[in-house]
Image 1 (cartoon, rainbow, N blue to C red):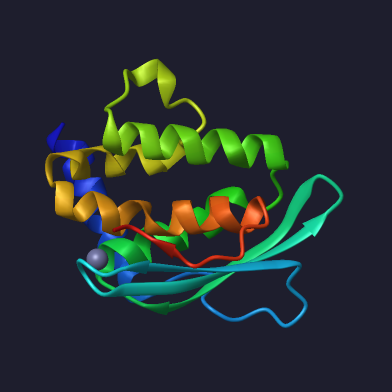
Image 2: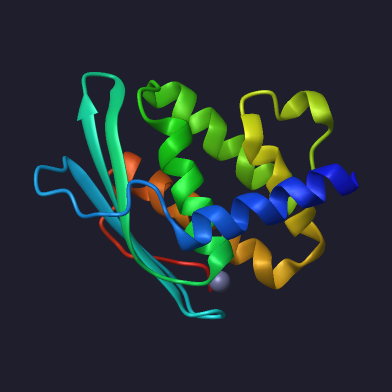
Length: 149
Ligand code: ZN
């Protein structure tokens, strides 16, 4: 467990400081805005679809290290996956953080499992899930901004 915690700190530091796929996307097919008023995290998520596949995903915005790292890892994890796979990863990730999941229910999450410790800190759960709820909205063509409150 402490190993997982160390890995979590490493990933959040790294991706929080140097987020991947951190840019706008002029030819995005979908985009959604997410806002977490509790912490002040705000991000825009861009999505490019090709048929049933997420061809590209990127984000922009300003937020705490956890929200930024979570969004960065999201983009890394989901590029090239099908919509059905993406939906499943979103479900598993949010479920892990809000309900808690047994180990065999997080098989699609890869290194994202390091976020499971965040569950102990309800305020932080909103930071960690913001990008995921925003992606869900983008994927399903919801135009309303997403807010965690
Ligand atoms: Zn935050």
